[in-house]
Length: 360
Length: 240
Ligand SMILES: Nc1ncnc2c1ncn2[C@@H]1O[C@H](COP(=O)(O)OP(=O)(O)OP(=O)(O)O)[C@@H](O)[C@H]1O
Ligand SMILES: [Mg+2]
Image (cartoon, rainbow over all chains, first blue to last red; front, side, top):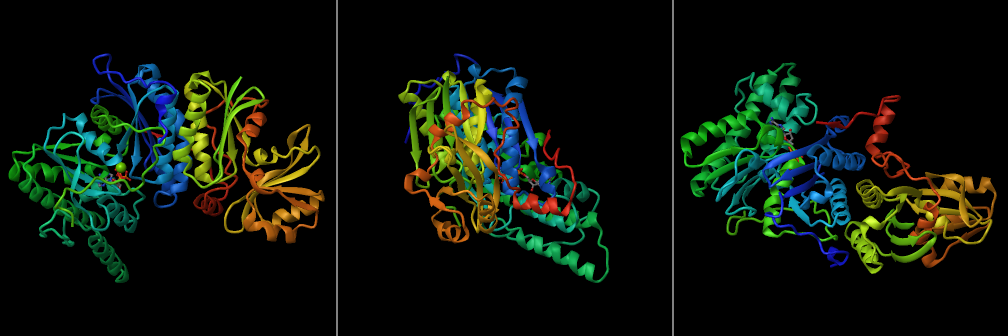
């Protein structure tokens, strides 16, 4: 493999030499984000350009449209992130980038820009898994301590992840079909809520009650896996049947019932994982981690059934995709020596490994 | 003036280093390789061989399209990022003009053509004047009947250039002007030619808004535009 080192030896600064400053890139889906993070714990800047309005025209993210927006925003993001942080390229320690999972065309803009920037300024390049990024958003609340468990709930993922040490991630449970966020968005469509519907369903749910008793799939199975497609179908059928009878169902009750089912399953599975794995922290992260129903239920239930484990929920503002979380994950990856060379490619289906012996 | 020229608009990739009008290093690959994997290592290797540092560069010349959307974005992202962060001049050149520019014979009418899948093409018509391809019919997204009709109407003997195996017979049948098909390697883009074409051009002022010349809306955008005539297409992306 061709190596960057031929041009000039990369600067590999030691942390004692200066403050560690990482320029992080995140373009895995429909946000173009560039951040400067100091020592993995201070956000000096976090530029985020969201394309939600554009994709709302189509009812969901259109990959080619997303890629075209990313290339329009990327150099703006780099400049604004550095300017706001008041940091010059010469002061940087490393460049980090999400290289998967996500949409390949979107990922490629960040990967290409990050490689180019690293080359231009003779900086080491740190490849970051987007899901590790989501988890490390919680780092801005308090330092992660190990072993810990992560509940990753986002537009494309619903996983319980075991972290035995910093930067080590092993899946112990996963969704068999739809991701939690995906279910929110699909159900939202039936209620006429524009993409992405999670936040609005969350708001509606607080005005309603769990009156529909939707199914709680796999809730009592002896594993940490999930399934949300049955819930989605039950929801859609309930609404369609009512429509055919010319009956109007209460939207708030529908939202509350749907959310109660999702939250019930997530919390039950997390509690059972917390029983099996004695960990110091439960990290709640990913776009759906912004859900108030989920945050509240975990807090209450963990205080009661897992008081030995601390709930660390990612800050609300950092639950969605952003580069600050990538910078925090990169701080750990950098210390571990993770480096990519100039041949780094996007890996749209990048996944954490399963914990040995647990996989379905 | 030290120039880096890049073309990843289609399956082949071509990278060249020039000092003024002189090509000093060049690499062109013909087979389908991943541009994302290939481009940066190729740039670093060529530059290391010449002992050029990134900050030594004065100008970037990039094939701006048309071509494969993903392919275009690799070289354009690299070019605009380098130009923006190192304050280097940036110019874009038509990817079709790059092919036309490899034809030497003065006065020749050249139609560079890219396969745009299904029965679609990207094509333009150029004439070689003073050794440079001069635009005669603008680059466009078109198809075989439409493009051959335009070439027939132009009425000049034409040299077709591009990887056209799949379209050879259909084009030959539809053309009633004398047509010459370019053979073999000459159909590959040459970043040396690209660099020379980009040398006299004025550098882009607004690097941020430099994007590929796709010459075509994405299917979703095309449907949207058809359903919402006259709608403003700005402000879809918001900084939060
Ligand atoms: N308050 C909320 N309640 C429930 N869901 C929410 C809330 N806020 C956002 N979401 C959901 O979060 C999802 C977006 O999360 P995120 O941006 O992390 O996903 P992604 O990046 O598309 O997917 P992934 O991270 O798995 O690759 C959407 O499905 C959205 O509806
Ligand atoms: Mg995400």
